[in-house]
Length: 191
Length: 323
Image (cartoon, rainbow over all chains, first blue to last red; front, side, top):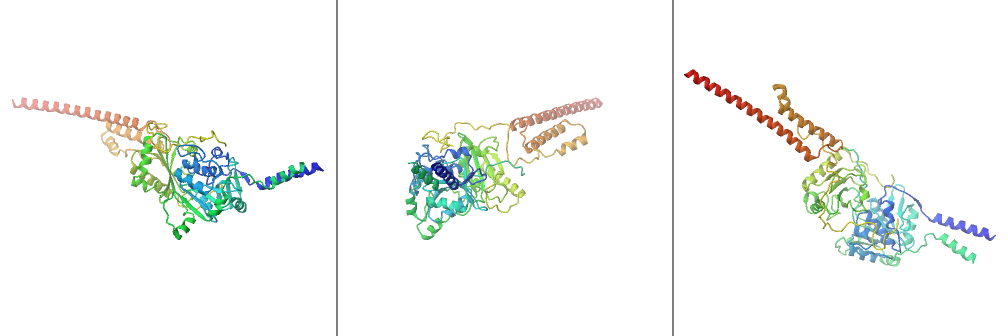
C-alpha cells in the first residue's frame, strides 16, 4: 500500500513539473538571435538574474558596457547579486548605458515594442526572477523567453501563460536604448 | 518520515517555479507606473512629458541598417568612425550621435570581438573597414538579411556616401516596396569568476599601430559589383584605322587594352577575383601603351628620316640642274 502511495506521489511530481514547464524548442528569426553558446555565457551563477538578462540584451544589441555587466572589464566592475530598478539605474548611469527602466501597468506595450522593433528585453518572469524576452509572434500570440537558468533552450508561452509568468515577478522591464542588430547578412544576387 | 518526504515532494511538484530569484519586488511595487529613461538627456517634469515617457517610442523597424565592420588597431577604421561622426554626407545617412533622429540604424562591429564575429560568418571581407548596408527589418524592401551594399573605405566620406546612395537606389529600383510583414518569428557557463568568457572589444580605438591588412590583396569584394562596362569605351577609331589603313600596331594595341579591361570587368561582375590586382593591371596597361608609343615614335622618326633624305635628294637634284 505504501509503495503505491510512493508511486502516485512520484507520478504527481513528474506531472507537476511537466505541466509547469513551458514548451521548449529551437526557434529561428527571433528578435534576439544569439547562438546557444553565447546565451550560455549568461547562465545565472549566483542570483544575478537581472544582470544576466540585461547582459544577454547587451550582447545581442552590441552594447559591450551592458554585455559585460557580470564581469570585471574596462567598462566597469562586475555587478552580481540581486537587483531592483534603482540599482539598475545606478549601474547603467555609471557605465554610460542608455536604457528604459519601466515599472507598472504599461510593461506590456514596451515588451511588444521591443520585440516588434527587433530588440530583446530583460523582464520580470517567474517568482522573483528575471529572464530575457527574445521574441513575440504577433500572428500566433506566442512569446519566446530565454531563462538564464536554462540558456540552452528558448521557452514558448501563449498569451495567458506569458501574462502569468510576467505578473509572478511584478511588472518591471529593462530595454536597452540602442538600435537592434541587423539580421544576419547574406549575399543575394539582386543586381 | 516517509510521509513527510512525500509531502515535500508533492509541494515541490505543485510549485515548479519556486526557485528563489533575486528581484527586488517591493521596489517594483513602490515605483508603480514609471518609465525611467536612463542616459536619454534631460526631460522636464510636466504632465505631458510624463505621459509621453510612459509610452514606448515610435517603431523604428522601417530604418535601414548600416554596419561598419572594423578590426582592432586599424587606422582607416578609426578614421572612418571619426568621419562618420562629423562628415555631413555620412551623417545624412546615419547619425551615431543621435540614433533616434538617424535615418538608418548605425552600428560598429569589431571582427576581432568573439561576441559579434558570428554575425558575419556568411560574408567575405577583402579589407577593413568594410561597410555593409541592409534593408529594414520590417520587410518593406524584401529580406532584411540581403546585403545591398558592401565595400571598403577609400578615405573619401563623400564618395562612400555616394556609393551607398547609388546602391540603395539601384536596389530599390529592383525590389519594389512590399506589403509589411507583421512579425519576425518563424521562419553555456561562466569562465573565470571575474573575467568574461570572451575578450570584449576595447572601449577606445587608441591602438593604431597595426597596419590595415586586406585578407587577400587580389580580392576586391564589392556589393553591388561594378557594372560590366569596360574601363575604356570601345575604340571605334582604332577599328576605323584598321579598316581604312590596313594593319597598324597602335590600333592593335588599343584593341588589346580594351579587350583586357573588358575581360577584367566581366570577371569582377561575376564575383570572381581578377587575375591581376589593380596595381599590376595598371602596370600592364601602361607597359602595353608605352610599347605602342615607342612604336609610334620609331615610325615617326623613320618617316622624318625618309622625308629628310627625300628633301636632301631634291635639293641636290635642283642644285645640279641649276649648274
